[in-house]
Structures are given as structure tokens and as C-alpha cells.
Image (cartoon, rainbow, N blue to C red):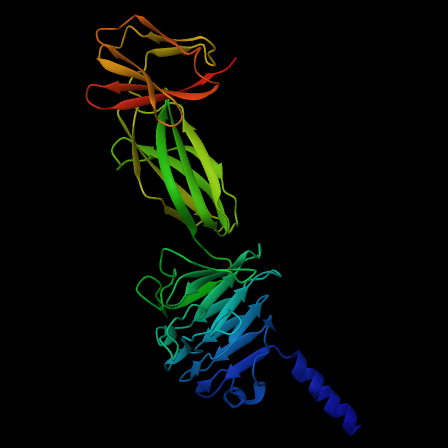
Length: 372
């Protein structure tokens, strides 16, 4: 009977998923946790509470799965904190960090209960702090993304590290002015799209937009917006995002009815939870000449440019190869209603650029093909 009671007590404790830090000290010190014992690592569907008035220093790499949560503070009557000191660790598994992983579903969280609660990443005995802080591990398993810490970082699933050109999205300390208490860090919340470039170019009567994302986490779609003055915006199209990617992804969109003068563009980058942010604004000059017709395209022997009767400005035609070398030049003055023929039979097959340059320096480019 005594054996049975002891065994029953062991089973009940093993199945317990509630842990409470009752005394100030290091996370790995079993004595600060009282009767609950030190949290299992990794911890699945567990609740970890740091009592009011208690300060805990995280000195391990701790992984949270499922619906696990860390509550910093309880009633909020006294100051409580979780401090993550930096190290010189050589991997994410040896650093001081919390890893919020939703690989198996769920949404691990860290909640700052009140303004008297705090989560801080501080300069510790190490100097780098690369692998220290709070990380999110996404369902795509392309790596670990730091959201709180000293240095921004993406760690791929095979351990390759990539420094990112921005600070961790929540800084080094919570709560803060942007995220007042009570505040909850989520593993599936708004995470960034890292935009590599965003550009636009005139192609005949249309404007081609292109952009590249270096990293996508939980991205949903791009809303392409246009403005005449960079103040009032309208949506001109939507494009589905990749969703989750640690590799570069290229996107393209064509504005087939651009404004007559300047066209300003921006991307509204939306995440799956409905949050969004805007890209930098770019400006693209509308097509210089609207009444042009270029034929045949592809061309084999001759390329003909028909100049519309509504074109009254003077301009220069340049035919260039794909390396930017000018092959032919024609200066056009009072050319409305005329045609220009450019011989191309001596050129190798391939893509060429027909460029129109106004007297004010504005340019318009059209792609043409030479094929036989």
C-alpha cells in the first residue's frame, strides 16, 4: 500500500504542468521553484508563473511548445522580472534564451502581467549576445527569429546565422512605450517581411513594379498602392505572399493604366493575423509618349516606330542592346504623324531596348525582340 501511494504521488507530480518561481535566483536553480520543481525542458502545454516580487535570471536555453506560457507577475502588486543576460554562446542551444516554438501547433506566449512586471535582455558576461533573447520558431521550420534581444538575428534550421538590418522588433525590454503592459508576446503574431528591394520602371505605356523579400514570416499578401502626390493612396492590385520563407522571393506587378505624370507606389505588407506595415515609397515617371506604336515585335529585318499625331514634343530615339550599348540614334523634331524605320537585320537574335528621351531628360523604354 505504501508503494502504491508513493507511485501515485510520483505520477501526479510528473503530469503536473504548473510551475511557480517563488524565490529570486537563477532559472536553473531548483530551489527557487519551491514544491513545483524546475520546469521541464522543453515544456509542453505548461504554465510558468514568476510570483510578484520575484526576479528570475534565465541562464539556459528554454523551449516552449503547445500552449505553454510564462506569466511574469501574478496580481501585479509587486515588481517581478525575467532577466536574460547575454553570453558568448556559439549556438542557439547553448545561449540564454526563450524559444517560442509552434512547430507542433499551439501558441506559446510570454505575458508581462502589469507595469510592475518586466522582461529584459541585458549585457552579461559575454560580449556578443547573438544567441541570447526571445526567439520564435515558425511552423515552416526554416529557422529561429529573434524578437527580443541586443542583436537582430535569423538562425536557420541547420545552424547558419544571418544578421538582419534592423533591431529586434520588440527591442531589449518590455513593457515599453510602443508595447505598454499588460502585453503578451505571441509565437504566431505579427512578424516582419524583410524587403530586399522595391523598384519600378516604365515599359511602353505601362509601369512594371518588382520587389524582393529576403525573409517572410507569417506574411499573407501585398496590397499595391498608388498615389499622385504621395499623400492620398488607392489600391491598384493585390498579390498573394509566399507566407514563410528564409530565402529570397521575387514578385512583379504591372500598372497598366498609370497616371499621366508622377506615379508614387508603396506596398502594404499584411500578415496572416491582419497586422500590416508599409514599404518605402518609390516614384516612377509615367510613360513619356503615349501615342507610339512599335511593330513588328519580334522583328526580323526592320523595326517601325509610328509616332502618334498627339505627340508634339521633340525627342531622341535610341536603340540599345542588352548591355546598354547604343546601336542607333534618331533625333525627332515636329515628328507627329510620321514613321521611323530602323534596320535590325544585322543584329543577332535577342532582346533590345528602344529608348525615347525627351528634351527635358525624361525617358521611356520599350523592350523589343529580334528573331528570325
